[in-house]
Amino acid sequence: MRDWIGSLAMLAVIAVVFGRPVHAYLPMYQLDTEMNNVVALNHIFLKDEGCYPSGEMTGRVAKVEFDQRGIIPSGFVLERETGDRMFVNVPEVSISTMSRVDMAWVVQGLQRFLREGLTVVAGVKLCGNGPIAMLDSLKPL
Image 1 (tube, one colour):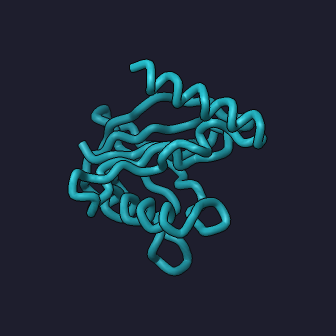
Image 2 (cartoon, rainbow, N blue to C red; image 1 turned 60 degrees about the vertical axis):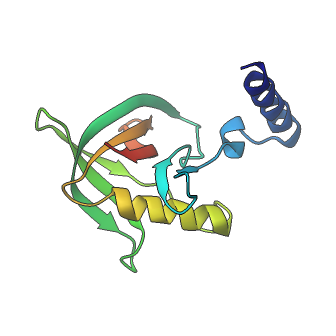
């Protein structure tokens, strides 16, 4: 346990020195034991200014919107057990915001987890006056 706390403390020091938020150094995806498939996405929303975490929400993916090419999800409608629906934006996934390796794994996770009818657990941050819901983490239930 102490090694984990020490590692997190070191990340915080590195973040201060290089001026990047701590979550920018955290893994964006979790792979299965064979290292072939994404089982969870984490920390994919890298902008914290004006945003606050709203916790995890469980629900069914009711609709998915894609980028202009129809490959990368840009947002989705999450339907809760109560029937309430909310639109959740997916942050930009590109080589300008992450490495090519991270991008490939994040896209795989988004494509596999954001399928209509699939029940997921989505970590959401709320931003701005709207507020606008931004996806930060995602895993199938």
